[in-house]
Image 1 (tube, rainbow, N blue to C red):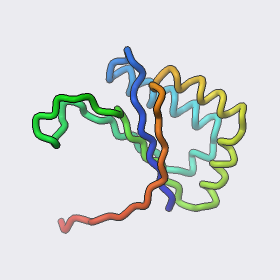
Image 2: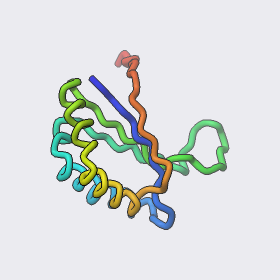
Image 3: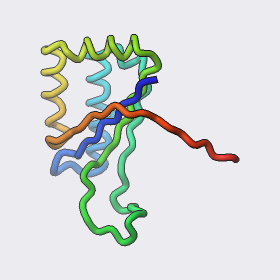
Image 4: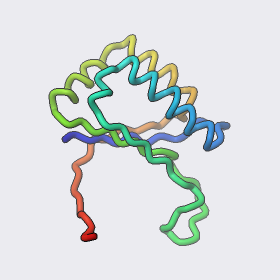
Length: 121
């Protein structure tokens, strides 16, 4: 399994609802259309609840990101196909052009090494 996380900030001026709607219903479908290999991955969007920060207590600051998106690839081969497809300048230009509608600059994408503890339920 290969997993990467995308950290992104919503575009200034978008409400939470507008941001979620655009990302879920416009940006992700565009990416799926341009990069059909994404259908072989699992994509999970985690929207940060700014009013529900539990640590540190009484946090009053601004969160750096509004969403953390997990993309999981179940084989190195499909991940490599994805990387090759994203290197297409025409596809990349279309995705980048749409990203300005939903994200502020400063998006980060990081491959992670997953270690998990399972709860005894």
